[in-house]
Image (cartoon, rainbow, N blue to C red; front, side, top):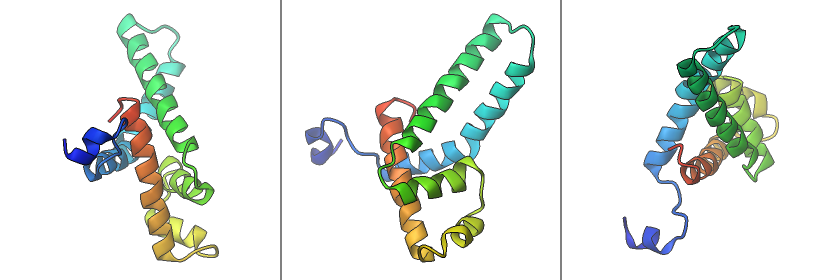
Length: 126
């Protein structure tokens, strides 16, 4: 832990945390949602399945909350399109190009990821 992190009450997310957040949004979050949907179709869950269902539900709720807490409305909409709705980067740029440049879309993605990473770090998800 460096001197700046020691002075912060809630350390900011690192680049490694941001990378973990991108992986979580691309891979883990869709898997959690799919697994939760499967469990919801089952009539009876074993205690182990119920535990997994509850864990997935909690993690999904935390990620959704983390995205809702992105202060910049444009960054939040871009993150939702790119990661929650599963849009490709190219399609995300095309969708938002009327409002901003490709570089601005990239900056908004980075800003949104950093915000989500901070919240997920605070909540102990990453």
